[in-house]
Image 1 (spheres, rainbow, N blue to C red):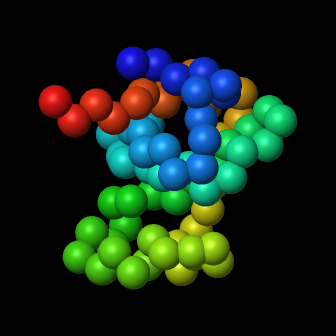
Image 2 (cartoon, rainbow, N blue to C red):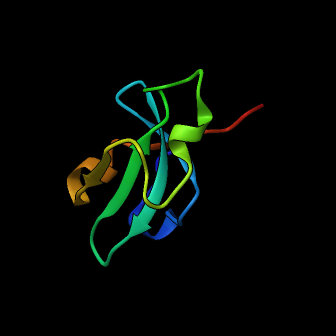
Length: 72
C-alpha cells in the first residue's frame, strides 16, 4: 500500500528502496526516519531520541516511493 504524507505518524514502519524504515518525526511537508536494516543484531541502536543511527529526511517526492509494511 502506497503511503501519502497524511498516513505517516511517529513509529510507523514502512519500506522504501528495499529497506525497512521507522518514522521518527513528521513535519508539514516532510518526514524523518531511521533505517532499520543498519544494525539488525542490536536493536538498542534504534532507541531514541536521540538515535545512534542517522535520521534521513523524506521529501514530498520520496514519500511517494514508500509502502506500508503489512505483515500477513
